[in-house]
Amino acid sequence: VAIVGSGASGLAAGTEASRAGAHVIVVDENMMPGGQLFKQIHKFFGSYKHYAGIRGYEIGKELLEEAKKSGVEILLNSYVCGVNGRNLAVAEVGSVRWLKSKQIIFACGASEKLISFPGWTLPMVMCAGAAQTMVNVHRVLPGRRFLMVGAGNIGLIVAYQLLQAGAEVVAIVEALPHIGGYDVHASKVRRAGVPIMTSHTIKEAHGKDRVEEATVVALDDEMKPVPNSESKFDVDAICLAVGLKPNLELLLSAGCKTMFLPAIGGRVPIHDENMETTINDVYVAGDAAGIEEASTAIEQGRLAGVAAAYKLGYLSKSAAEGMKATFSETLSDLRSGPFAEQRKLAKEELIKTAQRMKGL
Ligand SMILES: Cc1cc2nc3c(=O)[nH]c(=O)nc-3n(C[C@H](O)[C@H](O)[C@H](O)COP(=O)(O)OP(=O)(O)OC[C@H]3O[C@@H](n4cnc5c(N)ncnc54)[C@H](O)[C@@H]3O)c2cc1C
Image (cartoon, rainbow, N blue to C red; front, side, top):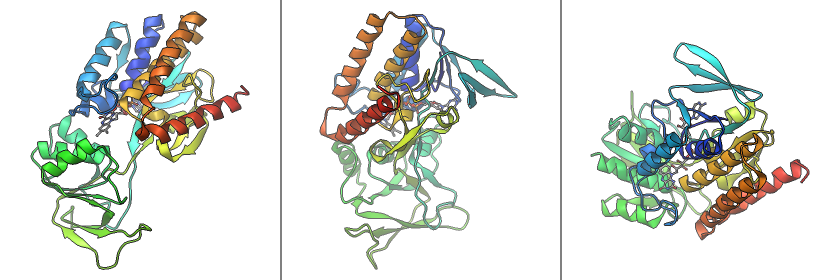
């Protein structure tokens, strides 16, 4: 079993397939395994039965430990740059080689969405995840005075982590009339003195060789700029936290079909209840399967790992069915709250479409 990505979903998938007896190789482009989790120094939101209140990097350590114990092999500094059938082209320093497998699990995460505006290509306009990687992984504070665009969980959390790292956040602007992230994160930044300006967006970034100033504008009920409502902020960095989208390139190269479901990130790969895509023996899990949370990424990874191991004959039908039922039940628990309603409906639609396409 070849797995692309050593984040929450890839590690969980690898553990299950390896525990069942399969030879599992997880490939990751980074020098450290763990994906997003090792950047997350905050206590996780979500279900208390499922990691809520535990810091992201601690969850990562636990998953990594579990994967290593089960015998998963992890190939780091290795970038999967192509797919041919069930084989992956893996680029390492100075060479590209083929990794032959019988089952592939794409657990390759997500990328940040962008918005464009005059000045958006100036140095120091960056995605919030990039700023978080610089601060929490590389220990580099990329600016001193930030404007954050987007008050979803990522915008709120990264704004707080920039404050913790010693930067100033002059404001968080949010185009919607309400905050998208959880109250607990919004309250923390507000207590630290950061204003959250709803119904506002960035109009322009100014500067000669890099960001020196930002213009913000109010939006009316139709999301149109309100005339003469501009205000200027003296900043040296602008972070965009305007959503995530699944990394689809490899799935598309493999021939997997997609559909458009805005509630889980836009264009997403069609997959069935076992996380199998429209191509036999090719699975997807985690953010790559639609944007949700680490907890759902883990359970989806476990489902894909068990399904792949079963297909290879390492598990009996009843053992595989039993495990899949447990993971599926946890997944529906995790999607049961009001915050998850839209995601749950989108996932149901994906699965129904996959079943229709497979003639089930
Ligand atoms: C700021 C922030 C805060 C968050 N807070 C929470 C929270 O409180 N609670 C919660 O449940 N979730 C939270 N999340 C979401 C959570 O971190 C993710 O949903 C989860 O970690 C996704 O796991 P994953 O395995 O799908 O992907 P990732 O962790 O992104 O792992 C994918 C891995 O694949 C690698 N990869 C991709 N393409 C290739 C390739 N071609 N070749 C080799 N390697 C490749 C990537 O480098 C990466 O290491 C947060 C996310 C962010 C950004």
